[in-house]
Image (tube, rainbow, N blue to C red):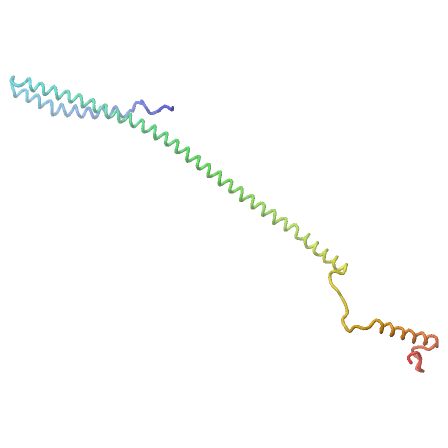
Length: 200
């Protein structure tokens, strides 16, 4: 158990308040009540003074009781204030601790969130730079594949379009042409001979 540092500490203001309140009461008694008793005793002569004396003594006892009540009440209130100050101090410390703890937790969560965001941005940067780095390589690979395809005949196809002919007819025509050339060669004619030559 923690001790109350405020409890039992002499309040420098409480004594002054007690003295002031008691002084006001005593002053009022001396200026009003006691002169009234004295006047009443003087006016009554000897007859009835015992009764007035008894009233005066009762009045003084009430004065003393009132003076004691002033001190007790003010000092009791000061004691309760000391307890309240301690409780407020404890609650204040607890609240400050809880606020600081909550703020630290929020700062931790914010920091973790920022680290996650930073990690995501780093991954995005790595992806972007990898793509930028690989783009020329991709261009080269595409060019190389295209060149290989063209070199191996996979890139484009060429062909002739037209009528189709019979292979047999083509062979016969070639044989006829070859036979004519052989005759012309054997006869000794030239292509410039207008006398019939191998054209005939």
